[in-house]
Image 1 (cartoon, rainbow, N blue to C red):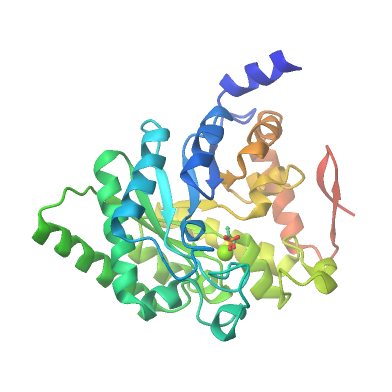
Image 2: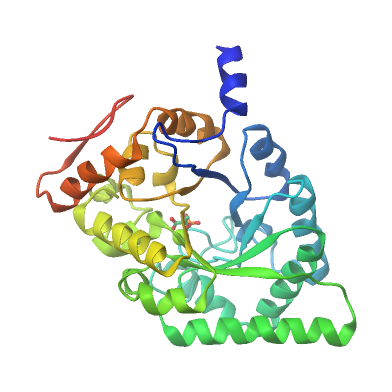
Length: 323
Ligand code: PEP
Ligand code: MG
């Protein structure tokens, strides 16, 4: 078994009909990067930077501390791209998990993620400067979470430009970035054409996209049975984003939990997804699914799933089947 794992580790993720698939890792801290590399990740598709900010008891990391953390991740990945998401604080990721949560932070519909960053421009630009400086040490993407409005896109890009100007003024070294948007609010998925114009790439956050499309709180166990990324409404939004990304010639990644669910690999391939980002522990199992798949044959089947009124049945080891 060990030998098989080793072999799998060094086998490129290519489908039976020759489609090359990108397999990336999700990490929470720079110290997660070596494990991602060891599992064969071709890069970091989602660095959840908010974990640097959590449980700090009011002392949030400054530009320098963030720069060091991002640089550590970049160096650990040895030339592979690191996609750093700006803080996605709020809702299920409060600044403090120990102190009492209050007001804004509590609501999934409140002042979270990009909304929080835009409300704290000094803090936002310090993060962007840290990310830009890390980009001088290797390939870096920046990713904005929870965008829902074109005005948020404009403001976020403006802040990024200001951060660059500030670094230029101080003479600190910084590098080029590819800029991406998380597509995790139905509004963003429905306006994907307008969104794509402003970005180099997008990444579908199916955890939040499912939560907001189905109005099911992802953290509420009493409705966990209703939380389903294979609900046709969610699948149609995913399919739309993938299709339009392709049409615009821009990369579409998927970094929600669905990307690491081996029962869904074939479905996502069939919907046209070519870039998956997941917990490092899932990388090899997903690769195994890819190696056994025929992307062309899956395309027709996935079209049928999208049109179907029947629920999907998820069969362990077999993947998704229509009932
Ligand atoms: C998502 O929403 O799918 C996602 C990847 O981001 P997070 O789980 O950190 O909200
Ligand atoms: Mg999210």
